Amino acid sequence: MLMPMDPSGSPDTSNPLTILLHDCVERVLASWRRLHPDAIPPERAVRRFLDALTTLEQAADALSGDGDLDDRAAMPFPEVQGARSYAHLAGLLPRALERVVSFDAAAAVIRRPGDDLVIDVCGRDTDLSEPVRDRALQLHALLAGGIEDPERALPPRSAAIRSALYVPLVAGGTVVGTTYIASAREGAFTADDERVLVELAAHASDAFGRVDGELRALRATPRQAQVLALVAAGLSDKEIAGRLGMSPRTVRTHLERVLREHGMASRTEAATAWLRGQRQ
Image 1 (spheres, rainbow, N blue to C red):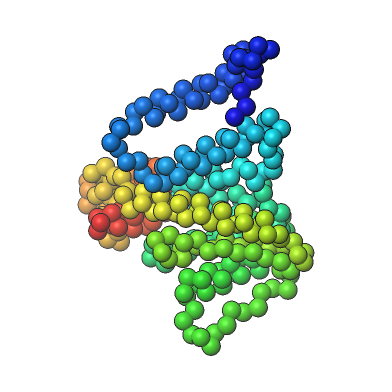
Image 2 (spheres, rainbow, N blue to C red):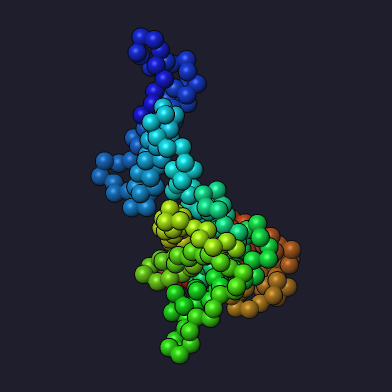
């Protein structure tokens, strides 16, 4: 790893890069020392730590001129690993590819518990948005086993799509999502692009598992839990307020706090996550 040196060959402690690296290493070591010798860290945490070390080594090699400065070395897609909800993950997947793969339109489909689908589309060619969205849903239905009739074939894709790549997102042994990228040009994608898509799917699977685990263990105060239980029972804010002796505004405040803390989009999603947690 590159370390700036002074003329004598010793580390140059006045160099800003040296100071930055020294401070970073100190923080990492401080966290490491808090780890009990007999503790077994979560496998996902170990994997992220090793990925981060690899990325740091690649970046250091690039600084010294010994490595490749290709943007692909910036993986493992840290923005995807920071997904807070199923909808957030669906939005991050196609956008994470924009900096490393050239495409005209892309879509990501994520299946939430209960078989509710979330889909997000992005790209520079708005004319392709609808065909790409439709194709992503068709492929997801096939990959996830949604097409049971062998006589039903996957319909032909839109003539506007001349090149495409897709990859399933797998978690817990089942297909829980699909990422699809497309171009209006023939032969737009390379083997490297396919590798990037597969790499993205691997990290997205980790992110899905983490989001799913966090939502199954939804944290709620006793009052929030009461509100969520009544939402799950189908009561309106006004009816919940009457049951719990509070104002409808207070009910909405409790729900909004849960949605904000867990990155959820609706009261139904929060109530469903809370119910799943009660069944664990």
